[in-house]
Structures are given as structure tokens and as C-alpha cells.
Image (tube, rainbow, N blue to C red; front, side):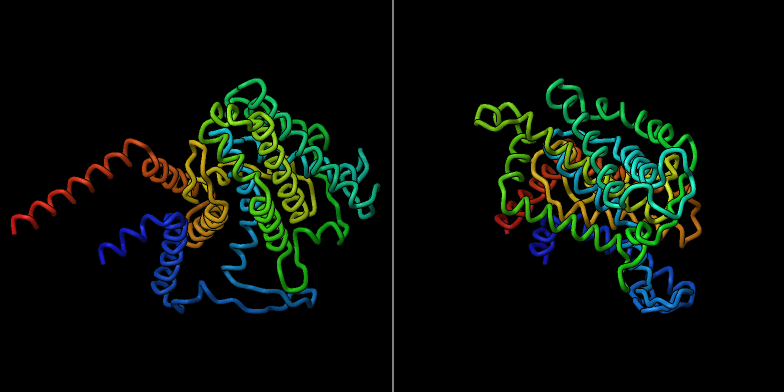
Length: 363
């Protein structure tokens, strides 16, 4: 039994899966304490909206829906962390900028409440995503070619990105009341569209990592950039590529978030989501020091973060207090991953094993 548990704890996805199961257990206990069905958390049903449409309904569906933006951001953040051993703290602001650019083009500069497109829908979406990719390229250039620390480099757009979005929107909320634009944040049949978009993003990047050498390149550069360069890897280009992908993910997440509220609220879109994306990577069992990564762990971590947030709200914790609990989780995760702590635990385990062997030999 001990051997099985030891093997289980050493599995790559043990931490994210355990965290998700722990959150589910808290919900089950909470439901039972309230006198409700113990498995209400897992209940999924089809309900009718006021417009007469049938949609999936349930707490799990809500978590998957609301956590889609974080999951999309976690894809790019995972690659950035792996290749540069740093984080991109500008993704929330880049989301806001991408959404603002998209809505301003669709509305026509100067308008703040429209029901007709000034340009085709695809032009607005493409422009928003392109701006996000340029932001990623800017961050990547500073990190890879100018050798600026990732957090310091991305601090520029963390501060300026949202401000640029406010300038584009004239410090106003731009409303787009076209149903075709709202589609990206609402429903596709009975399924929430953000879930489908997140699933497509995960599928595409998973196929890219599986059938190309990008994953190997990213991990090699993250483990030892100098050795990778000597081995013939274009380290600078690889790091630059990961930041561009991160910008792309931020752009897509920005379009989803903007479509969800059918407006460009550049003050609030993506606010603090960079912290959730970083936490998702850490909670997914990936080292924040770069190197090997598991995308699946980051995705599980992203939805676990949303599950924690939803659970806190259900338990009566206010939105102002929720970050405190997230901070505690970050501290625990960082402590578990700290080399000193790991070395201490390994040493304790080895000492215990030696003691057991000596006792067995004496017997």
C-alpha cells in the first residue's frame, strides 16, 4: 500500500488532479451541510433560456465556461515559463487591448454603442488578435534579444497595455450589440462557446507540440539556454516564438471576454487574470524555473483555479476576500516546489528508509 501511494504521489499530474478532487470534496461536504444532495455539484441538465433556447446547465458547466479564458492564457503562459524561466504578467492588459481594438474597429472610431458593424466581423477579430501577437513579439524581443528579465520586460505592457486600450476607446465602454459578435461569449447550440474555443486552442497546440519539435526546443532552451545554443538551437527565436504564442492566446481570450459582455470594458477585461494563469501553471505541476512542462497539468490547474473561485463565492466569501485564499494556495505551491523543501523531504525519506532497513537487518 505504501509503495502504491509513493508511486501515485510521484505521478506528473498528481498535484493538479489532487487539487481538483480536493475542491470537489469541499463542494460535496458544503452541499451536505446545507441539506442538499451530496452530488449536486456534478449534476448537469438541459434548461430553457428566456429566449427559448436549450442550454447545458450545472456548476461544472459554469466552471468550464468561466474558466475558459484562464485555460487559454495558461497555454501560452506554460510555454513562456518553460522557455524563459519567467512569467508574462502583461497577458491581462493585452487581453484588454485586443478586445478594445476589436470593438473600436467594429463600432467605427468615435462610436460607443452600435448595432451595425463598421467593418466586417472577421476584420475586427483579426485586428485584435494581431495587436496581441505584436505585444507578444515586443515582450519576446525584450526578453530574448535584450536579455531583460521576463517579469521586468512584461511589466511595460502590464502598465501600458490597458492604458492604450483606454485611449483607443476614449476611456468609454464600447458596446457591440450584434448577435454574431456575442456568439463567441454565449452558446453554440447547447454548449457554451468559450468552452469550445478553449478546447480547440488546447487541441491545436497539443497537435503542434506532438507532431513538431517545438516542445523539445522549448524544454531544451528552458533547461539550459547556453547548452541549447551550443547544440544548434536558435534559443532567441524559440523564446520569441513562445511569447508570440502567449500574445496570441491573450488575444483570443480577450475576444472571448469582450464577446461575453458584448462590449469593450478595457478597465476590467482580463483584470488580474495574469495571476490566475501563472497560478494555473504552478498548480499544474510545472516548475516556474523553466524546463520540462505538461500542458495538461496547466489546463487542469486553470479550471481548478476557477473551481476554487466558484466555491469561495458559494461559501459566502466576497470577491474582495477571494484573492487572500488564492495567495495562501500560491504560497503552499511555491513552498512545495522550492528546491530546499524538496531536498529536505527527499533527505527525510532516505533517512527513514535507511532506518527501516537497519531495523529489518537486526530482526
